[in-house]
Length: 501
Image 1 (spheres, rainbow, N blue to C red):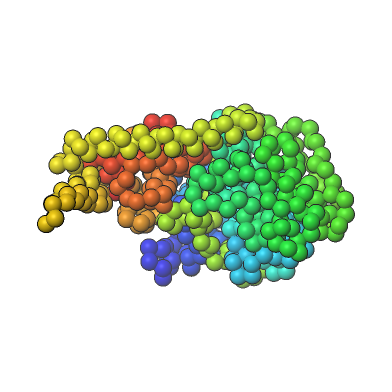
Image 2: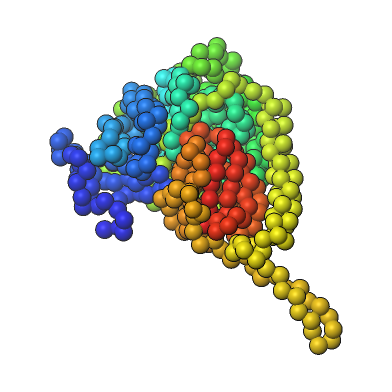
């Protein structure tokens, strides 16, 4: 039994037989449904998520919407709900491994295999978009490869419903920054074109073994997606047909309306690049997506994965090995636990996104300097009373030279009085062991994201600005973090206050 897991216990009608995967927002078990006499994949979300009524409403709406999807490349959802204060999703189990594991084991794929996988995922996405769902977390970890490379797209039960704009609470951790469309870094409403962009990133990684924009920090990822041109896969990996250069460039257009208008169009273009045929230009499709965006046009070009019933496997498993997290921090990152995502205001433009991103980067630089000055002044006044402030020691050597030695700031020991400690869902991250919230509008889920981001961006106990994505709003915020008393206090966003210790 894995430490801290529910393996061997009963959860309603489910007997939890084995822990399959664990992330920051929940766990997935191989479970036996005693009422229906079948083995399933059971996702249990963290207890605190069920305590938010607005989150519960979104969870039920989007689970119901995802359960309607009948596309063979979408893992079916059997049931969902709440048992003993815990939200759960009951899904079919499938034998296989995720695409991340396949890439880690075998590296870049043969172009024909890559196109076959992308075609199947495109079919799942187009079906979801036709039903008003945006996945928002397309990445290799969420694509399961079964026997014969039959691909399944997972976590549609916690995707974003396009007509749910009246709900502002989303839920779980947002997807990897390495696959996020430029408009995701703004407050614009997200359309299906964001999924097309992400799927193009996955195609590039399958072809070359690397994501289009390499980045080791959140700020560099934002800058790369917003400003850098699309790479040419034929140059990144010799042997990739040159036609894929055009496909990747089109799919990674900065403005959503300039990309392929459906995932199916991307797949058709990829098939043409593979065979050396003329690559079709994106087709303009009438607006019809709920709340804005583009309507679904079923692909009819030969070569697309046909609709129908996917293969059945017994016994079944939900996923393969949990992939390593992106290198944006030192803490554990969610693997398949991505959650429903919020809507935003109406669409924007490339210039708006670029300006917003540049302003954010400039704020990071200037704000960090301002914070350093504030911290420096404070340390001069309060060094004797504040255990988190570095202390300078002046000594004189035998030769009469003066040496100024500054001792490193000690790591904060605990949350300040009056704050509310949060569950450490990521465990120890660097020298930080926990987080706490200091305002009523701040969620513990966001506090943990701030902790991971701060720990991965520099030395502990030092003032700096960071970027953190709120699992509640789905928006990436600038947070100013400074040593304060017994904790590092981060403020920003919409009156958010987070204490790290």
